[in-house]
Image 1 (cartoon, rainbow, N blue to C red):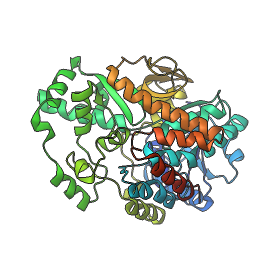
Image 2 (image 1 turned 90 degrees about the vertical axis):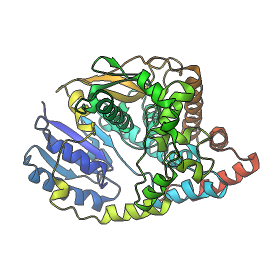
Image 3 (image 1 turned 45 degrees about the vertical axis):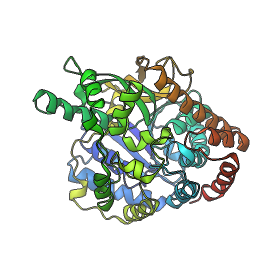
Image 4 (image 1 turned 60 degrees about the vertical axis):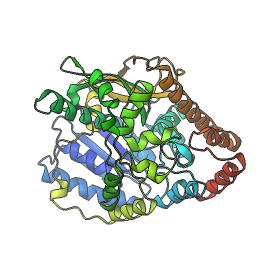
Length: 447
């Protein structure tokens, strides 16, 4: 494999960049230069030292030269791969995203993709992504861009809006959780050793975090009939309030049991293919109260915990054990290897719609399967889900398009129209306007 120059925008981060470097350390096929760019220059410099420790601990010294570069143009120049993994604004910006809607009775589990929080987070993020796209067009127009940042759909769409010729995709691991869930079911149903999640073949359709499975196969066996049967069993939907309370006590905010995914299958004919805590935010009927949510074993991630976690990450001193690499479920390095010609990968991707999802307009960023190979991404046409699912996804995609257009044209009235159109904003027009105006101030971009 040829020498590769990789730039991580957000290279001072303490989560995704660290995992990417650990995955890189396990990949003997790749070598070259790894450039870390971050507006927090000290954080990027610190991660150079962490990278050197990772490569030493995992006996991959010499594969990559790692450097922190302060000017984004210098960082991007000559790059083959650009990774974008940023937090748009300081963590405290999310106070307005998450706590203000609560004052108006609007609950959110995550608040980074949809709902009032997702829309105002997009307001912070999209101008940054327009600028990234312009810089990429100027300094490395042929580079492949892998975006990890939420709201995934809108951030990826912003790249294409500002630079239509960009070669970008959004990478998300939510579908992997669904594959792992089904791998567990295969072990249970067929009495076989648990297969690797990649052995579970899914037909995917939708937009990021609101993605659906129309077909599921393992070893040539159709799993959908068993899933439908499971979704129709009263035992499946027993009250999980006590489980939710234990998870709250233990701060297990990200755990879920695919009960919401199965309820979508029962009620609408397609299995949800993202975690329950994401799925519930796209429709109005799960987040009517904290108690209603707990029945599905789901908890809302508290704002205060996010702030504490951000501080702990910034201050974390990595031990030698922390930096030892082992195969992960993340696919960033595999995607990069495929684009550089080292392999071919079949996986879920967030890309402009070329017709792979027939019920949404072309050009929208959609999530479906595709083949990634040397300098090429070929999306696979997804099966159409039932009309009810199409209608749900179409509304979400339309609100996303309104948000994108509003930010590109700096149109606050259109942004408010998108805000009003979101399914979670089920309050009076007067209250919605008051909330929106407060969030414009509280959720603005600050560092």
